[in-house]
Image: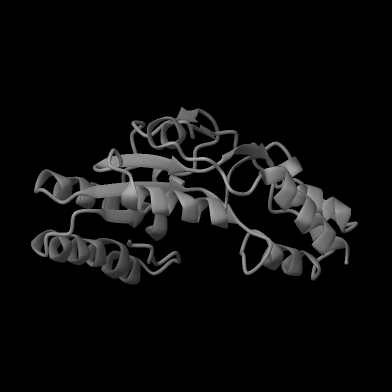
Length: 220
C-alpha cells in the first residue's frame, strides 16, 4: 500500500518522491513477487479542469505546470509500465478527503476559518469530488483483497457535491462573509460507479451526516 507523496512546489523533491520513489517501489515489489501493489493516486492527474465529465479511462494531463499534479500523473504511467512487466497493481484516485477529526478538509479547515472574516477560496458552484476518510480506508481494503481489482484504476470518491453544500455551508454557519474567487466555477464531474459495480464498495460514512457534524463543530 503506497500512500506517500510530496504535494508542494519543489520540482526536485516532487520528482524524487513521486517519480523515482514510485519507480523504486514498483521495481522492488515486482522483484519480490508482490501480488497486489495498491497505489494512492489523485483525481488531480486530470489537471485542473473547469468542466467536463471524467471516468477512469479519460486521458490524464501532460506537462502540467504544478509539480504535484505532473509527477502524480507520471507515477501512474510508471505503474502501467510495471503492470506490463507483471506487477499486480490497483490505482485509487481520491479527491477531497474529509473527516470530522484530524482532517485538512474537516476540522482543520474550520480552525482556519475562525482566523478570517471572509471565506474566499471556493466558488459556491464549484463541484467537490468528496470522500470520507473512513470510506477511503474501506476502498483501500477492497483494493487489497478483491480478486477482480487487479490491474485496475478506480475513482475513490463518494460523489460530486457543490461547494455551497460543503465548506461554504460551514463558513455561513460560522457567520463568515462568503466572497467567490474571481474565476469560473470548477464544474468537472468525476464518475464513481466503477468501484461500486465491480468491487461491491458501499460507503461507511455519508456526506450529509459528516457535514452536519462539522457544522456543529463550527458553531461551538
